[in-house]
Image (cartoon, rainbow, N blue to C red; front, top):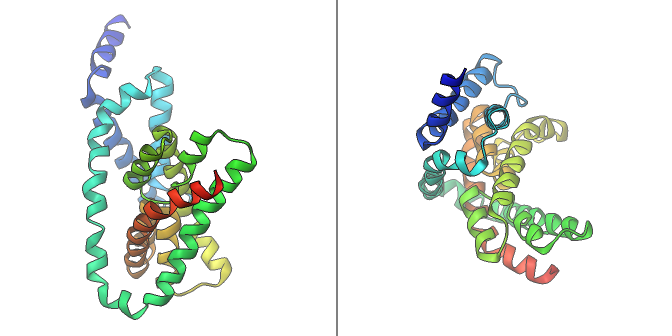
Length: 238
């Protein structure tokens, strides 16, 4: 047992172990979701986060130690955000034809996402730093973290809230849209892209390709608008 503990102590001190475990956890989660037929509740991100959280808890590993390995994946969020220009360009003609409803949905979704979060946090008496951290929760992680950092928020809290928001959106979007009778894949995709960023967009692509394309559009446009909107909302409320 002492030999095993020594080996674990050696491996856990380096970043390669946690990078490998993060990738392995997602592959296991994605494989499980595929075997189950990819139902909404079997979200690969949710499963992978649960597996990694259990591993960190059982081994007593601090998050800072884990992030030394996970930061390599975190770095890829930047190029992934820039790559959002691809679905925008590919669907430029569609966007032009539906510019007005897209703009209306974008403004309504972005404003409500930021304003409702900030007002609820303020109503519960949360500290200003926490309110700032909550405000950009509905946009993609690199943008949300950048906004939070620039305004004095807690970056870790922002990252957690972004992930939670995305998972909730990905799980609830299909049954919610079905219950509301919304059948247009463009509307369904745009809504989940605005409300649940990358995780919701990934779920939209699993359900329907057109919904995924519009989710990517919603994600990209919401990232831009949220970066402009959140400082204004925080200034008005705080």
